Length: 98
Image (tube, rainbow, N blue to C red):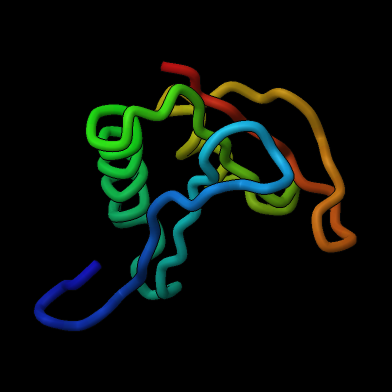
């Protein structure tokens, strides 16, 4: 994402080898947290995955210590499925089905 021609973050979907569905991911510079950019990015990634790629399922992996990202996924329609261990840390797996 660019703001005033400055890169503030990135995101999109990738193929998940471990979980069923495309994996949604995004990262924003902390100076831009709480500004709505992550929600905008997630909504566009969901649209792209379902409409342009024809995906049937997306997953979002959120550390339990990151309630802001959890809220973004929930507001975007993702539902909690289970807690998994990812890179040695408890992580919540959310999914969105078309």
